[in-house]
Image (tube, helix red, strand yellow):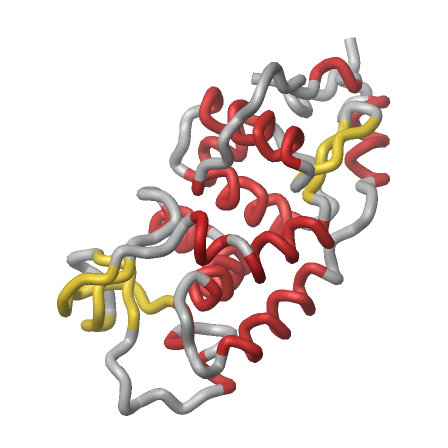
Length: 210
């Protein structure tokens, strides 16, 4: 039978938001109005389908994701508010010594082009084959470097979030760039909702299923 509202997870009792939940939401933002499934998100993000399902459940409960008529998508205003004002307290990064890695925060697109920070060592996600040597900066979730390589739009969103996870003189530029991307998030997902009702090419839709 087609996916329905009941196929979305229903929270039972208080839940604590986890950093991978933000990764899941950012991937949905990167996808835009495209339909998603738990299995595809899991594959793209290097997570298990059960981890994605649990993350969606927590996001819905805390109000960072809206669920209606079998479709779920990030709540742009709420997500932006949390990222700007809360992520640096909830998921502050661990900073380490100089390592090889993947640039992030103010040293990667889309912020790198707006600033000249050549006098500061870059922040990087530690990775032996990374292109840059810089200060170790822990990603939101262990699979972030892999997920970012697979999706450039996701990479830029993660970079912006990392820029908001630490105090910096150019924080306002990161906030502005993030808001620009949040404004592009559709309030509803008509195409996906239609697919959830009709299925794809007349076949049963697999949206929101494990």
